[in-house]
Image (tube, rainbow, N blue to C red; front, top):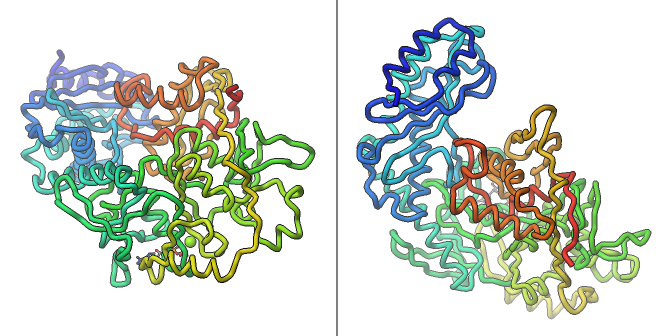
Length: 571
Ligand code: ADP
Ligand code: MG
């Protein structure tokens, strides 16, 4: 193996030469207490920066085995190392110098969630960090001296501060791991206890702002306080028992006046599929891992989805057993979003009136009388919500302040008053008895079929110009797959651009399983099995530090929004 001295020599030799000469440094170097791997060198100083890894031998890194002895701990430790590495780049990297991206050293940037990422790995053998470096140049001439400073002054400081156990704050590291393990432990217990969600006593749900996911701070924050009737005690792996509000399986309404905290509670439940960092306020807010936020999404593409449980008899005899459109309406998009989620295993639906199509949600007595059922294609959700639970075992939590007709179909009614939840189930039942809704149920005998689809490989073309495969993410909410953009703006449980990166590449990876017989569900399962067994690295051509774990639900959502998608119904 080449050594640090060899790298120094090359950098000295290529100093002042054209940028392409940087290619000479690709390879592996023994640098004493770590190994440096320059995996991919950027083509010019403006291109996306070069991919670099370091591996510190396990013995030197010194992490006690209990810090990564199960999956939960391992993920949390890797997350922690990424955060510390990032922090160290801010401290020790001089940053931009020279042309374009010259001088940058940077790693994936985790947010409030703790996710499995490819930016850091821990095994008995070594601790690995994957990051990028903007190899420095002035114009197109290699700045070899600056490169030496980056590799031999800044980088060693960064990795010593972040990848060696003895240099980390021990208590913070252990707390981080314990908190995340406790959240997993909590989430794992939900199903057995007949719950779909748990919100801990004292949790802080509101966020600093619509664009800042940090917790809201200050004197006006109301910590979560569970109503007596819903109080449950749960055992944690590390912290002993905690109490909080348990939401049972079935149909739950979150009602209350405008601005009293309905959507804030629902949003916290949406993100309860993830673990949160200490101090977030939602550390012990957990939901069933197959919980999906459903919303209206007019304008979206739909390919052969059987939306007949909700919509039939469209004008001009348009069928709905295999409904396709380039431009869905509010109600058809919301129906498709539900069916597609059920197709890949959703167990809990979260719906907010704020982002729903009104005509999909309700149809009251007066409207039923004015517009007869044979002139209305939509069977409103209110007539399907119980069948969802009875026929398919799928629970719903619905934030709705606008329609009391839903009292008839609810198992539980939580009312938010000044950010405090109250159990008003009995009151709502009494009112429902006193004032009969008078509407006629339109849902029929059963929920109806969930027809699976088989995606066709030929409808996935990742090529662009001369590139056979060109896939990139443009921010959190958009993937460009070949020449086609996938809009993920309505896929609200995606939280990290590294998830978007991974999903983009996973779509291409998935095409190997598209044999004309596998359903979308089969394909999603096959891809997740691959990433679980071999790691997220299987998705791309070479090791990258910018993948994060994603669920089958978001993955399927991305495939469903690819506007070239062609599928056939499974018979
Ligand atoms: P609703 O959906 O009932 O209309 P929201 O959930 O949108 O209400 O909340 C309205 C506002 O109140 C938001 O700005 C939110 O940040 C704030 N808020 C929500 N919950 C709390 C809380 N527990 N403490 C303080 N402010 C809160
Ligand atoms: Mg709201």
